Image (tube, rainbow, N blue to C red):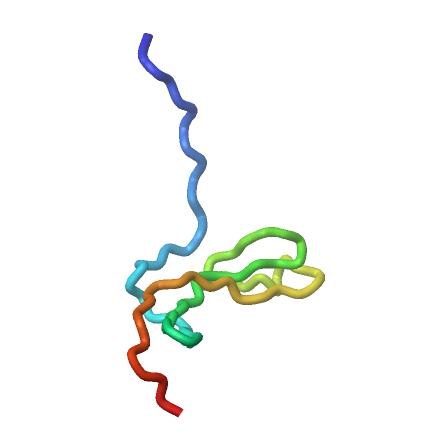
Amino acid sequence: MPFETKPMPVSTRPKRLASAEAEEMVVVNKSRRYTYRQIGWHGQSGLFYSLDEDPSKYEYGSFSPMWICVHSDIVEKLEV
């Protein structure tokens, strides 16, 4: 018997390419440098929002940026 699936819901979320520009932050520790890119928002309600959405329309409390590590490399010599 073939595997059956239910129809997918209509997606109304904004779409963004992974390569699209967004805010970035760099964190350096003793031996590595990490680059993070903002990919969306995390609301106090526990819901996640895409970067192009405005969570203030739906969140009664606060919301904060959601980051993903997009690159890491070894730091040879830390410049001060």
